[in-house]
Image 1 (cartoon, rainbow, N blue to C red):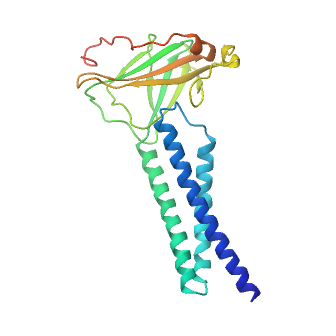
Image 2 (image 1 turned 180 degrees about the horizontal axis):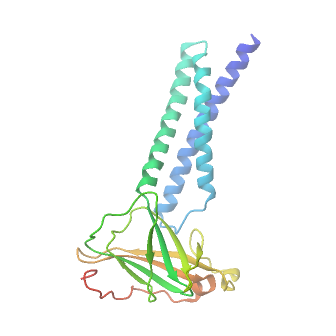
Image 3 (image 1 turned 135 degrees about the vertical axis):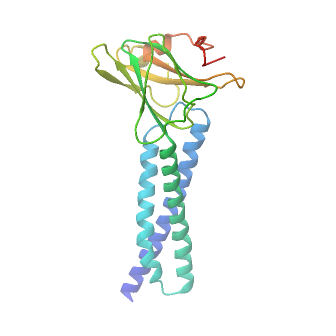
Length: 245
């Protein structure tokens, strides 16, 4: 009687824990999507670590639950076990497939910026792209000119992972960190931060017509500089032929 009760206790503990992990996973995904939908500049890293931790724990619980469910003494308990743990496993697999699709469709870009540049960078995408969006494992490298306006025939990405680097005349480069999630807070610490240069994704300017361009604006500089600079209402005129008509 003792071993059977012990197995039943594990069956219910694993099933309830799996259901809780699945519910927390769904709630966290909804929370992250809600933050991104609110046009936040970014999301802190810890929710993603929790997300993948719940995913790994859920997969482990689903695997462990299977022999316990098969050994359940009654049909009703087996149906509960298969229903709860099987549904949770399906959600975990859908999550994995979704992440894989997003990862494969993500555009990875490396932007090289002239060392010492501070101000607004503009990535201007052709209104009629002549190239397909480069996706895959490698990064596409772009070099900003000194005026900070980069024109490219590549279409605007729907999902992207960007890296910015200062490039020096001797060829070596320095990676620039992001200012952090959310808005750049006007604090005494940020007002006196005059050494570390960071990047801050400002906005995307949607095209107004079929011949207009899609423009990405990225601010770069020390936190003190970014807080003190006056916002620019419109990007600079782009007069190069074949880009914005």
